[in-house]
Picture 1 (cartoon, helix red, strand yellow):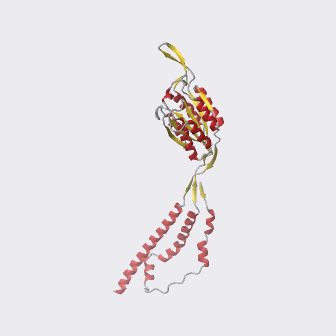
Picture 2 (picture 1 turned 120 degrees about the vertical axis):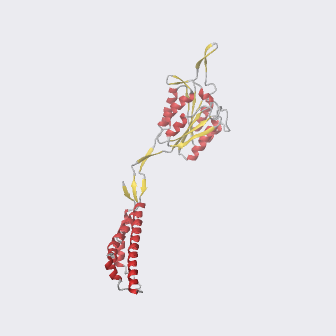
Picture 3 (picture 1 turned 135 degrees about the horizontal axis):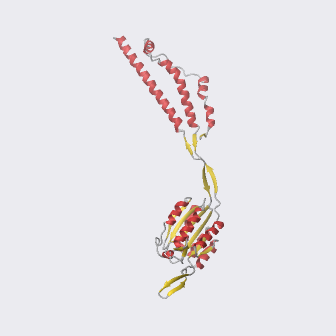
Length: 343
């Protein structure tokens, strides 16, 4: 809908009339230097009626231009449909282990065995879809840690990047400390009032320049909670040359280290041995870190001042060209008559 931001500007509408009515006119410069008595006859004979037309339309034109200029100065705007903008102070950084061990197919995935990374993708995607109002980001780490998606309200893009992740793209080892350190650095820069890290891994810290303990201390100093999740089955049966035997596929998982990180930062440690357990963990995280997003309604505003201003300029330009055209015709006829009298 249309909206006038400064309607009070129209109190200036009668200003030209006030000036014309109460301000004395400027005295003329005196009689013309050259008097040609036949000029009036030419005007009457030519049918131009220049003076009469000029008097009739000048007041109308100037009044219209003045109204258009005031309309432009009043800041006319077009207000669009209300748009809901989420507001939240929470920043949530998801750090996912993509080392080669995440390819281990020891977790249940819709009635069959799925790799650890595939189960994490599915459950974490469902979790992120519910985080309306949160700014979420994604870090993938192996031998090195990479910022795959910075903090953003665009959850669909973060989910897309997560689902496109492949094991081994960041190296075969596990740099847990570097992943936490990178997440802390980005969360501090974002200046979020509430921030937390959800770290998912199936192993121990075997690479990187920052130790997990040091990274946990940095997160604690910044007031950032770290929730750690260890994924992997506790035991599975495998076939070998001698038959079947039970093994622990999560023997490399450093649970003590993950518990320490969670305890120091004020978070919690969770153990996920199947898809259902991982889904329950994310449900618990929703309770611990609720996405209490407030929202406000805003209307897109498009300024339209250029429309009346352009119309005023076009009218002024048209009047100037019209006045010049009429005067040129009159001058040509005066010149021709003067030449005839001279001869």
